[in-house]
Image (cartoon, rainbow, N blue to C red; front, side, top):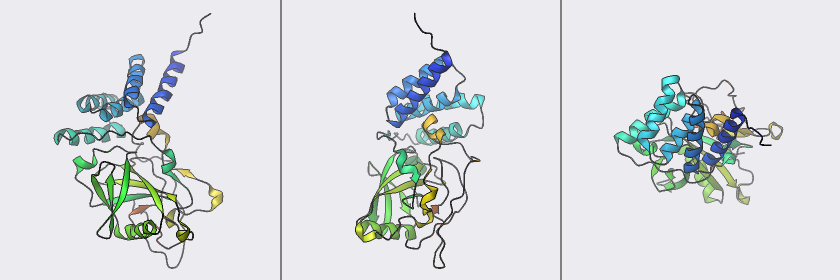
Length: 283
């Protein structure tokens, strides 16, 4: 006897598969799965937002714009749709080709633990149509440039610079053997941000913490920067979530504040005007 699967169960299964496809940067599959969900439930706004991301990643900019517009018809203030419509308008106006996200999303990169990860603002960022080419989660890399640290996309495009004080610290750690991975957190021209995670600490830096302001007692464990909506939508999180907590910082009489580094656990693309400080003392 054939077992009937309830439509809701099937939709959830497709949604889980669509999220996994986005995490694996399999945009063709993500496009197909989200289309199937919408065919069964035209009111599924999460699926439409995910579909918009898949269309955007595959270069179908006009179709992506129309998909996000459908979301806004039902929910005019949907932050994900609004943000991506603005992004698409910039890309279309400048006839800019999207840089498809090809690498798998690394959730571990966005986990803060023991001062190994920092979310940093970029200064002197590239023009909006350049920054807009790269989606949250896209890999980036750090390069030295005239005593500063420049942040480049994997294709070599310059995205911006780290604030000099933060850059000098990381530059010294890099020169003495530390290694880091980098990814785009926000492509918002007004507040572009990246995540940097220490992947290797050299013996010479055994007593130094990459991001002192993110240092917390071991018993507090870890905290995720990415919230569920990043994976559900394959893009930005909701704006101004109530669940955000303030990160405690290490205190010292010699600590210096740095407004270029965030202490809060940030979701992808959360707009945040707070100038949270980072301690710059060596651990």
